[in-house]
Length: 331
Image (cartoon, rainbow, N blue to C red; front, side):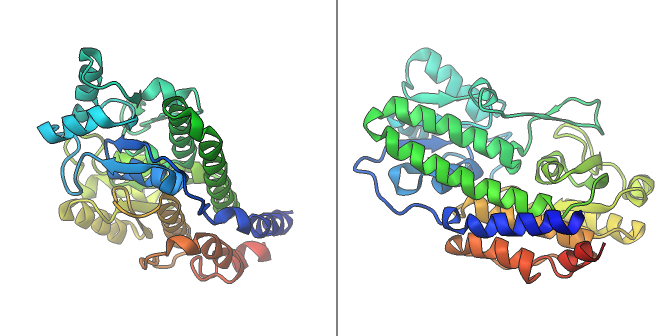
């Protein structure tokens, strides 16, 4: 039964190869879309390509929980057709809401309610009072699709003449994301758990069926937990997940926890710029699956035009997943 399911997934992915190549047709108009952070720009750019102009506000390396808008960025926001936020909890996004109320910004601004109408969901922080986790929401492909779909509707409203193009671009993006999701989700056995480094990491693994049960740093305002205190939780989990773009001290803590618990490490990307969303989704998923198989994650880049081929090669040949597929097929 398991082997049959994997075969179906492989065949389905092969049939979707055509859908995995972004459309190249250009739009006669390019509305300005401004996003609060770079990963949201990656979603919008991957989904709508050259039919839109996309810029982001918070520079790479800046703390999004501390960053404040500049006068030039406020002027830029006034020119935007669509503004895409993470939901509204960042200081920059709260300021955007204030500027909308003042009438300084007139573009279509997207917040949490807009995304929830398209299937967006917060995950509960099981390790921290089960509160909603607002960090790293874009890493979950369900949320990425909700953000892209809400953006597509806002673009239609801002520029009705481009509606057909925006809908076609969104459908293409959705096909590519769903093909990746089906391919990787099929290779994860049920009831897996992980200790994560920080709350954003949760969104990179739970859609795969891996539950985050503990975190080295439980929340933005909460101090990190000592490695020795987390060893029992790590020993009961299947892997440790950390972000390559996190502070060195946090990365060192994750590596030390893995060494002391004997559990494998998965290195993912949480914040990035100027790379397509689907490329990072593939890399993160492959890194998690390789860790579950006991192998060191690949860290080399994947070219945008090779996303579809990369998924298929990952499944059929094992270029990314190592021996994981062979092990599953033997069971």
